[in-house]
Image (cartoon, rainbow, N blue to C red; front, side, top):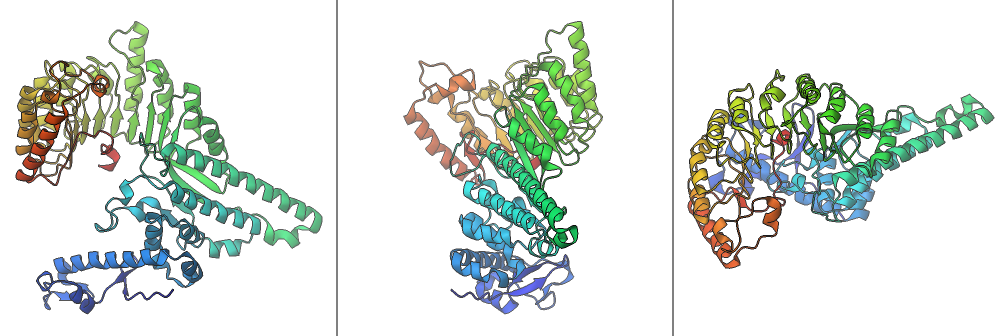
Length: 576
């Protein structure tokens, strides 16, 4: 198989090269009306006077598409690319990696990792939405299990080879990789697809790999020691294990009681292992206080940006034992503590002190931008809990927190108002006493709000009509969740028709209309009962048809309108 790359090379200011068409080649690819060339402003080498020509930008997209198509063709033949890799310019390795990953060419991936010519291999950067034609969804999809495993095994093979050879010069020249960045990959979540790899599975796989490489390092060190003892240190110095041979793995970790043991062992050996785990986002479920503390102490303090402790049933006293350990993470941006059995409605004198201690510890987290206290009973105590924060939050999740009007009023006057990008008040009854304070709050945060979730808040058509003027002020809003509210077909249609002020809106999770349910069944009062409630399929089908028509008439086809809570994942604050 023969290849011919009919593209030139352009060197940018950062020193890297990228394939680029010559001007006359671009001209032939575009319709005449798309080529707006002006000799006085544009030269072959680029755009003069800092002006961006739309024709050239379009050409760059076409160039990227053609290069990617060539790459897919190349990786389709493993035997040929295996022979040619040593002769392919290193600048083409990234696009070949993308093509091999997307097309699940694991043998090619293995060879690319083995010869990777750069010090960094970042999944997120390689698969991100760099070009609207090929990569628009790749980085957002759940990663292929086989492809992720192939990359990990390739890194392990390189390290084992280096440990066996012990030749520093060979390792430096042949294996350049020093950083494998696996952060930002999607989690399989509830979609238990055997073809994909969940965050939990990636955590276990990397932990086992770290332990395996550490054991191999110890074995090679013992062999080298025996050789030195029997033959003399001078003769075997060249074959001694290389202490500088390592690959740092930046990764998000998810641990529970099942995987606690293997992750703890991996973190213990990680600092001296050739495969070094550096955690960015740490998530733990159903762990005891002692186990959680043990893992937090082992994490690299400089690399952690998020700690998510959920379903641990720690209570206020347990969280007060954990919070001092958060202070060791200077870059901690996000702290999530949902479903931890916090109830501040009836406190003893001792528990009052515990609440004050909790607020004090939260206030010490100077870099904190996101706080999630979901499913905590915080009635009337929000001012006390958040009052210790000296820096404004940008994300606040208070779902199912039994909030009172005083809590919402406090938020409206707090330091967080000008900065809030994400607000989740799901599960709080906004239909009665909270309605007017909520309207005021939304008006106050409208300049910055990107994400609003008010799922299961008992909002009817009347309530929706009342709050929409405030929501329409949120011109930057991207996500709106109103699922599981008793809103009618007409109420939802009216909202779609009037949604034009929300220019940046991308995703709306709306409820099944209340009038599509059987009259013999009451509107479900919770998400759990909703799952078991039947609606009239004929009415629902007709509503879907009408909604599609209205969406087109309102020119809102740029927005995803869905009732699916899980297929379209909600936006994380750190990704907004």
